[in-house]
Image (cartoon, rainbow, N blue to C red):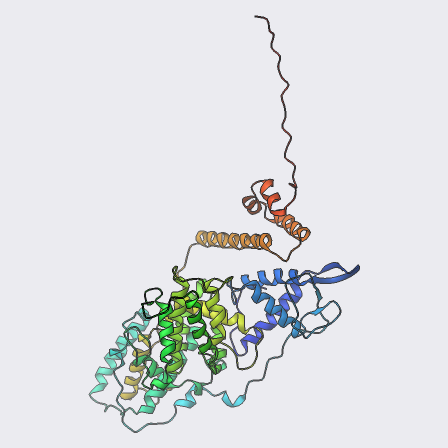
Length: 529
């Protein structure tokens, strides 16, 4: 499968499923295997499938290097359940698949899933939502007092010149035209209109309504999330019943500030940290829906295609806007959760919370489905959610801050309406959108160097996975190492500089004999003086 994201648009998770299954079906090597004194052709072992699919997922931008072998095994079990593969006797449907030498094959049926039909009633143009004149008076609240002063997107020179020219025209006409009264409905619909325009521009889609119904964009949520924040940018809820329970907040604060928060009032028994973490996890796992809500699933899944190094800034801007759409209680929970797990994963003093899994991997595995999942079962939910949570952990401070440029755009658009230059919130002149570069351009030499270094690291990780694999037999491991040595001799030589180091790993004799020491003929000197 090529290293690219699935195309943006509706039902992207289904499209990605079809892409992965097709790539697996086409690329997975098939060969003869012997089992129980019988020969089977055109098949593969579960361990071979895990190796191949693991490399595929890690090299694909939709999943990335955070994918684990256990997640790959889980995906193969779903392949078996959905009849993408079957065992050598034609059985499928159960999830009885492990990382071992069990034989499987491809069935004759197609593994592709059909795309659902979109409902035509939600296919409206955005202007239909902004077509009514409003007569009641509403004064826009000054949100800038509670909005953190963060750097927004910069206007281009061309747009700046247009704004200056329009300002001169407005000043000339201001004395001759009476200002129009702005209603609360005007304000709310402008918020909806502006944020949808920005999302469409950032995501680069022909119509944002393919990803989200305009009725799902609730202006009251956006205004509240931007105006009611603490000095750290965290949403402050007026209704405390929607907030996290006090005992959950105390537990999260304890782990986020560990060990400084562990004063004399807290117990100090062995395993205390694990019990506190389990308490927090149980609360979030019992929530009725994920923090990003079911209705925004399609929107966030489409952003996963932007989680690439050269599109990092675009992904941050898109997620920043999408998180404003959340109900305030969900946004607050998301902010506090991301802050906690980010601090815990970076805290070198944090005791080990799991015997086999590192803290960062444990955070992602535990809370991924609490953040993103579909109302209906989707086979790639776990992998997609893990990818998104990992990105949120690394960039949560930027993603969950308030974008000041959005408020500026709304105020300018309302000013156009007030002065009569725009009749309705969704028609006519729109405030110029800021233009910005998605990434800093680098030279061809830097690109080649990065490409080589990144590829070499991935190849070294592949060799290490072969070396440390517990599912491979000694014979199978030898075969894979010989194949790797043939393809990448320099990397292999770096890992095994001598035949003794290789023999120590394989518990055998060196495969290449050392040259025998050549003994020089002894020279007998005369004893005569």
